[in-house]
Image (cartoon, rainbow, N blue to C red; front, side, top):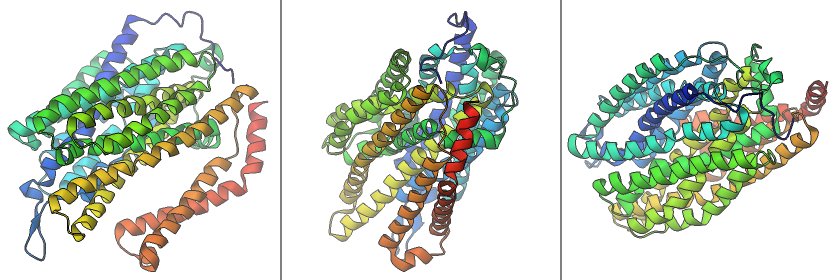
Length: 528
């Protein structure tokens, strides 16, 4: 594997139409994150909607809990999103990526509108899951299309510009959602954004043309564009190459913190730091747009520049950023007023997003053209399952538990809810360090591939160790916190968690045992 990939002659000349395509895809991505972020912005309004109030045995009436909202904004959405995203990636490597994107955008926009029509928690949850079904067809086809309109040396900045859909969509959801909710109710915000998304999807399908696969790649890669890689082969190559596996894990842990913040910052600012909805729609939206926006563009520019020296900078760029962000996140969770909190939040938002553009460029520049959409989908599967599935969910669960403990200790219920959320966000700080750890492993793995000048497989050993440790640690934690009762619970969620942990441990053991033979075979084939 060359340390710096050579582009084909003339690849540096990017057409005006390529930039138009990029703008259209970015517009769709903005709606992707508008729809995804809107529920997090409106958590406080949704929790207390009369349709979701329930009466307890003692006669008191309560709304939805932070844990219930955490499950909805976290676990269930990415569970569907990640599984279907891999399937969509497989299909998009064989069919029209533009058409798959159009169907997905129409679906997620329609289900967003249905969220506004929900009259109970179950229908709201199902509508939210439906948004995940559509969004599974969002980013991976777009990444692949962009890679066929821009050469390797420009993909970092192109993918960074595309990723501006993240801060612009999030800022739009905050500004639009808070204002519309205040004036017309939270339901109107969902319906309006859903309808607008369908219109945007129709515009995109009339403007964007499906590009030739491998059109902007070096001759050797371009010659592979017509190949068809199997689902199993692509998936196995990804998880058995430490350079790609650790890239995905670094992304996942970075996103764990990022999505925890994006899922609960609005509630923290409103509930704990006493911001008003009007102030939220202006100042928090501005901080999100500027902070994440600068971080997205800067990361793409920096990694394009530094990767010309060595591909190791695909790992070092986010590693340095996450390390620098850690103390500011801690200080943010300790803020006592919202202006101070927002100033301290700018750098964590700006630096946390540095993981995305380098990871996308790394993956898309490291696999065959026929594997790009599938590989991007696998990257997003790990990123979203760990990040979106874990971060907001854990914060919601911790917040509910911490608040209950504070009430039991005699604290006022409203104050307990505010401080419980603060404590939950504080507990995200150690995960910055976990993300940095995986980025160190990523840098080491990339350096090995650079030295060998070819892809390096470990036969699934790293993936096996990861699964084995996850399963054992998870089972140990269940026993420690719940005892025998926690291990034998027949409730749906605990039972599902137990089964997944056992399967992870077994699969990890299988991968570790046979890794040596698979590694020798894979590396011999790569060097043949």
